[in-house]
Length: 204
Image 1 (cartoon, one colour):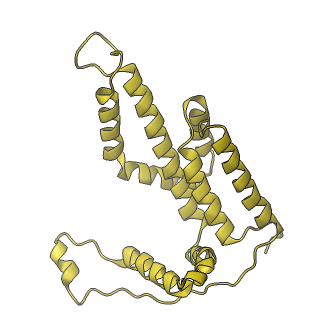
Image 2 (cartoon, helix red, strand yellow):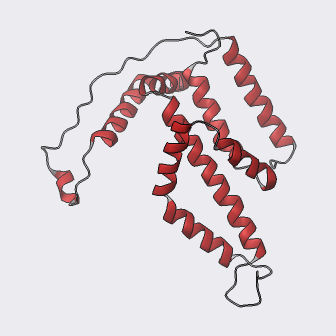
Image 3 (cartoon, rainbow, N blue to C red):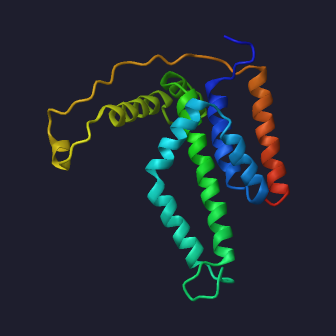
């Protein structure tokens, strides 16, 4: 293992922090972030485009609702024209959603199932003090992921009630790994960035 490798739990927390940070971006900073996201790598961009295609109707609906449903100055003299304010809102929210899709694509491409389960187990470990069993939680997560991945997509939803449809859960090893020095640096940076975001009013 590389000395600079991060613990899966640190990567998971950093990914969640990234999703939260995306919601604070707007304007030129948002546009620059989208450009940088396109440079994340061919595999990540390809998976991101697949997610974008799957959500195309959501994006189109969001654009129409915001562009035509937000009060403001019309783009051209007409009662049915979109407004400048609506287009600005549509750009901001759709841009943020595109960044979220790219973040999800990057997460799926770089985080294997064993790493995800290891990260989840480590993140849930402190909850033992309140009676929550992280082992049970990780097993349920594994079952849900395997079920979603292997379940066939029938045209008739009643086939889902057929007892013959089974899912092979298999087994996944969870590696016991301690947090290293770089993990502490990254987590401290996340906390510091969160504090600065709160102080600055949460907008970039």
